[in-house]
Image (cartoon, rainbow, N blue to C red; front, top):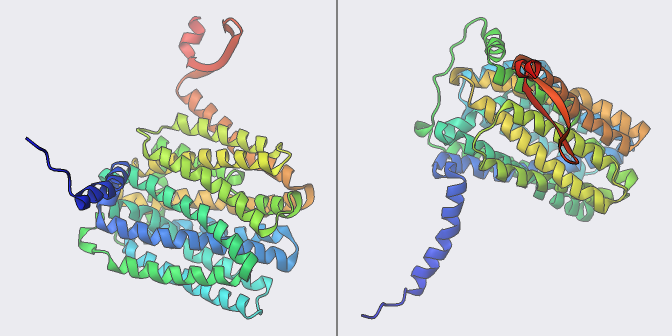
Length: 447
């Protein structure tokens, strides 16, 4: 019996479908059509948003010559979450998250368009950038809790862990490509096109959100207006240790450990003298590592508080090591490691909270998480800018490592105490080897 050779088009179909099957195995959340539309919108807005972020930071630095103003734009963009973040979570629980995202994305697009026109026409002033940053910060108040809690609606609860990892991957792919494109665009055409591209991406994102099928969304019942909803959200956080200590730890990490934009702009400007292209390269190095971390997190089976403590400690140590690197060739690989560990940590914290929170509280709890995350960065934004301006970029990089190290020490000590654990240093467990580990306190006393 003679076997017929497979037809060419059948072989091509099989080959072309293999990557798709592999992608679906890694990210099964993509089987949901609404989630695919959501991811498509993120694939557009994330790199475009990073283009604007790089252009914004570089533009205000060039207009003012003051790196501290770069930190001020971070504070203005993140500060409103510190003041009004809880109300944003209440809105996310009361109203359609899809409608909220369509409104906020429209605001982002309009702001980018106005600023882009001002830049192209040569009328832009530093205060225009600061006002735009504040407007974006105010729109972020309802946008972020709605965006975070909308993931479970478009992906389904069974795909939540995977969807969070994919979202992080998409975000970091944008952070990888956006700064690189912005660096080339700024060098060739100036800062204006970065803002205009972001405006166009925002319009398309609104159209993709409008195309979703609302009947297939896994939306929880909306919370009706009643007194005490903010207090109920805070009480829900306090009653669940997994949520409480994750929020505390992420706040201490975000206080300095995530806020690298100011430091990297200072490195590109004063340490390596590499200009806008160098700033984009350093930002892309962090993003490249973050992509590695987010893809690894997609295969993570479980996450716990102890793992988060270890990751925070590793992040702080890597940032201190980065400050010791004398050349850009050595600095960039450490930045890649910083990006991988930070994203693996942040994805783990987000996943732990989202899989622990009650569905009716998701918007408010995620608002607390984001408020602490962004608020800590807002508090430290101007501080790190001041340190970079007066003490140098290397000192500022050391400062960024202090928050994660302090957070790991404080939360780790509290958890060890609550669980009856005590660290011990074993100097001669094996010849020439020693390590630190924890054991139950009662066993320690018995020994």
